[in-house]
Structure formats: C-alpha cells, structure tokens
Amino acid sequence: MTVFDRRTFLQLSIAASTTALASTPALAQWSPRRPVNVIVPYGAGGGTDSFARAMAESAEAALPVPMVIVNRPGSSGITGATEAAGARPDGSTFMMTSSGSFTLTYLLRDTEVNPFDSFIPVAQIGRLTTSLMVAADSPYETLDDLVAAMGEAPGTMRWAHTGRGSFHHVGGQGFLNTAGLNAQDVPFSGGGNTRAAVIGGQVDFGMIGIQQAAGFENELRPLALVSDERDAFATEVPVFGELGYDVPLISSPIVVFAPLETPQDVIDGMQDAIRTITQQPGFIESMAERGNAPAFLPSAEVATVLANLRDDARPIIEGIEEE
Image (cartoon, rainbow, N blue to C red; front, side, top):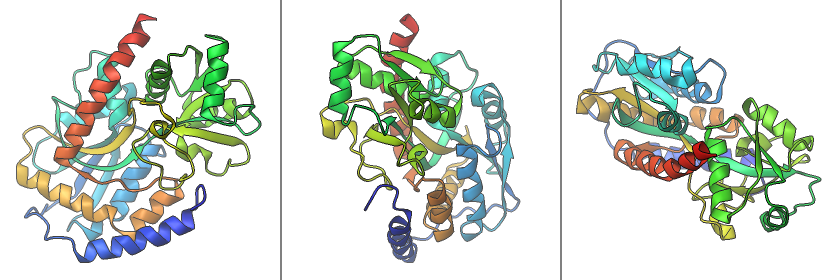
C-alpha cells in the first residue's frame, strides 16, 4: 500500500468490519432509555470532536437512543472534564477526550480532575500519533542524516511542535533524550501552523500528527513515527523502533470515559456499543476522510495504556520543567 492510500485501506477495512460484525458476541445487558450525552472538552471542529461526531453518527447501530455530542471547551480540556466527572454516574453522561493531552495536563498542572482518579475508562476508539517530518526539499533524507547533523551542531538546530506540554512536544523531546541530542524547540499554535513552519523552512524538522502529511506529500517527508506499529495510511513511514531508537510511546489515545461509580453493567454495555460502532463502514469511512483509523481497545487495556503513558511521560516532563 502506498502512503495515504485511502481507497485500498477502506476496501480492506470495510470487508474486515463486515466479517467482524457477523461474529460479534451479544452485547452486554444495558439499554439506556434516554439520549446518551458525550461531553467533548474541546471546541467543535477539532480532531477529538471529529471522532465524537463520527461515533454519534454510527451510534444507531449499537444503541436504542440517540447519542448527543456536547462541546465544553476551556482550560485545555479541564472545564469539560470537570463537568463530566461531576455528572450522575447512571449512564446518561460520558466524556470523550484526547487522553494523552489529558494525562500530560495532569502531569504539568495541579488539576482537580485527572484520567486516573476521576473517571473509569470505557474504551479507546482511536489514537492520534506524532511523527518527525522534514520539508520535502530538506537535505536530510533519513532520520540518521538528521541525527548526524544535530550531533555535529549541538543545540543549534530548530524543531517545531504544537505547544509546550503537548504530546507532540513531549514525544519529540522523548526522541531527543533517547538519541542524546539537543535542539531548540519552537512552539506553534495547531498542527496546520506547525506543518507550515516545516514546509517553509522556519525550522529544521517538526513533530506533528502523521495525518498532517495527507495532501502534502510533495512538500513534506515523514521520517519516523512515534508508535509501536506503522500507520494504517502512511504505511511506508517506519516507526522509531525500526530505526534503532527506543523512543517512549507518547501518543494520544481517543478515549471514552465514565464518571466514577458508574455501574459495571453500564461500562460493559457502552464498551460493547463502542466496539460495534468502530466496526461500522460509515464510521470507518468518516475517519478515513480525516486520515485516521479506528483503534478499539476495551476498558482494562485502556487503563494499562494510560498508566504506561503516564510513566513514560513523567521523566520527560520533569526534564522539560528543569530547563
């Protein structure tokens, strides 16, 4: 499959989803009687919001009631998270958030709510990953080329990310720590601006979401992905581990959470509903249009992923704060 080959991906994924749906076990015995509200602690139109709205559009295949997306932006996601944590734990309110960002905010700030003590993870529906990219006309053809150049000029090269403390920033710093390198980080607002800085040569490289390269194949060259597996679309981009760099897996799983004390049958029922939604052709197609792929994980596995993310990110953040 070539880089960002959506047509082939869709054909394979929809065929696989049809098979999966045919063999899906009976759903847990939970049947909500009124609309299910899903709080998104960010504004409408963003990356997390797009996952939520695609989920809601396919929810009728898994739930007997509508799913309603409620945007509650503010304070880097904490405003909406606080509202969700205080909701009645009866299955009427959940939260979908970029849990990597939520975890990093918890590590960076003294927040009233956090992913570990304020919520129960229900399921992961997708994952945002960061990648190291250079401009297409960059002299650095490979990651080793870039590493060699940084080694020859310590602390002089510049790299872009989407803001200090973002998972792109922490993931990039994790790479630099692993490789024993120093470079000047330059924060930008949002992935689009970061991408423009890389293309325009304002920086030597950038850490941005791999989906940001879609449509810019002639202007960007992704060199490596922070992940344990290659991207479903950008299949030709190696992960750092393949290139000999044991970079911490700093990513941002898109997770649905429930307030503490939500009954187990509700957690199980919503988890099974999300599993079914991620197998719907409409959901798969909607995500593919945005350069993303479904990545379902059940509650117990999400808890492990978030704990590992926290443990991997903590020493990187402590190093950043000491600078």
